[in-house]
Image (cartoon, rainbow, N blue to C red):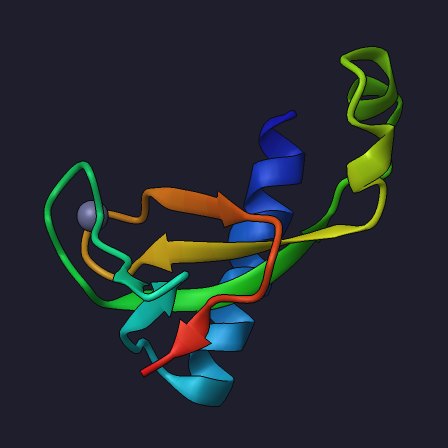
Length: 86
Ligand SMILES: [Zn+2]
């Protein structure tokens, strides 16, 4: 499992390198880190089609999720729709 998160972080770091951290909103509300309050995030995505997701009844979301990793504390927020970059 640690390996999964290492690869996820590596993927997010790659996205940050390409676009740089930025500010985002979803449904008209600014995305703010609930842990440290930062508004700077690096965008990424992750596949949801795992056996675990099937088990907990999320087959409807069996595609990819959008992730925003806080540029300050590295907390990851998950969204089912693409966040709007400001
Ligand atoms: Zn944070």
